[in-house]
Length: 335
Image (cartoon, rainbow, N blue to C red; front, side):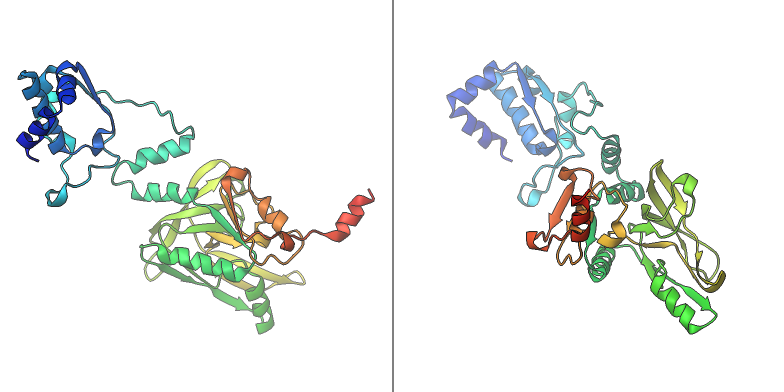
């Protein structure tokens, strides 16, 4: 940046020269976006125009901003120079005040997230908190659920870990029934950052119950020649809880006897689930895809999972596809 060229341009503007000479306090907001070379140019201009060798020609300078926010736009091929890298920065800035009170964000969880995002080295915790803010999507069809969950899993850069179930039973018929009814998948692929849901009660007292959602934050060794076990941060009614999830047994009974079993992690991918499986759930941040709703009450069940209209996004809504239980409507009308 040519200091003398800039100075000549300013001197051609009498109003600008007068403002520089009469200024007593200069306040620069969003200082993180000001290039260090421009900062030095302004400092030089003030000194020359005011005929004063003090930094900024004796003007009191107040700089406001957060260098963790947006940086300056690079000046051509010269790259970016932050203001704090400017030649005159240390001479100008004599006192630094850190403002700690947060005014915009009222939610303590969001405040904690923002504090962590500002710094490098908080990857896993940030991933956990960010993932907990992702919307939960409901679909009318299981195939849409599977496709969506697979897309989200594929988008994660972390390496995958695969878990294949072990089934056993008295006969093929029992094993077939188990495969149809068991909530634990026959094959489960997880990555760090994957959103998951418990499909079995692990600890009711801790809030780790069927339907509890969480995020895979890491993996833990479970022994030689065995797949690593996922470490999941769950969002429970009692708060966040970190748990290493181990293999569990799922059984099918007939006549009071266990006739088939499956050994698998009690987890499934849970960026999205079917409307049927969402019944009874409360979802804070909800996205509903109503495309193809086919049963009475499906639209109502899906929309009633949410807690606030400003925390919901609805897609595929068609008034003609909204169905209610007419039998109950008639029964209720007679009550």
